Length: 283
Image (cartoon, rainbow, N blue to C red; front, side, top):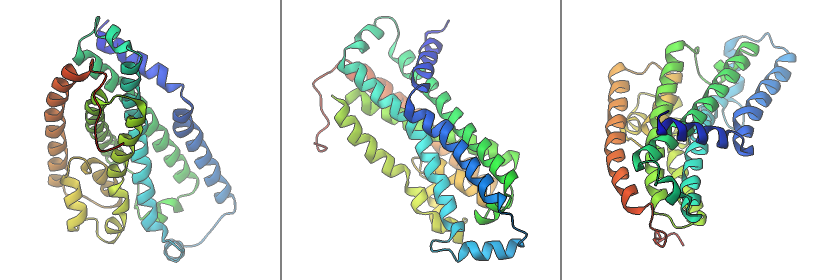
């Protein structure tokens, strides 16, 4: 069996048992469905216009915060998986396991095996949330109205998965490069926090998505590789995004991933077996 696949299977199986992963990928989606069912049990025959009006009159208007919540969930799903990659690489350096691994696999096989295995974990998370969302919508269709979404279609779901894969791949590559240069898990925690904040920028800009998802700010964020995939995943759900914008965003991110992969692979070869190197400025 290909060594990359062996590494991927190991990463998937070992990390799928983590409590944090099970909580986010299994427990929270089930709770979301249960809460929706409880809410729906009270019943409502109000017309759509009234429901939207009441949603807008809440202390923080629901049609504005729900896309933001989706973006945050999207980001967390990505960083749970890529976070495992970061901590795994640093821990393997700390306990010198990386030396044993590199005697039997190449740097490229190690890198792509980890990214593939943990990427599958991310896909499972995303599917769990998509399924739970569709079940919740079936139970309580008003959720779509309150989220300013007309309907969920198969092309939407496909695009969301594509943008998830792009976002995960880009962040995983970046994090792998950083992980190779870190000396301990404490630095890993600090770096991970910084990257997570950057990934949440689209969620903070959700007000612009609601008021006009085709305005300059959402479009600009769509073309920046580190924010583009998450921004586009949010935009395709709440409006009809022009095809050329989707293609450009995918192309820019894919090219960035290719360039980053080449750079990171070289850095990994140089730094994976360096144990006393620290990134300054985050102590």
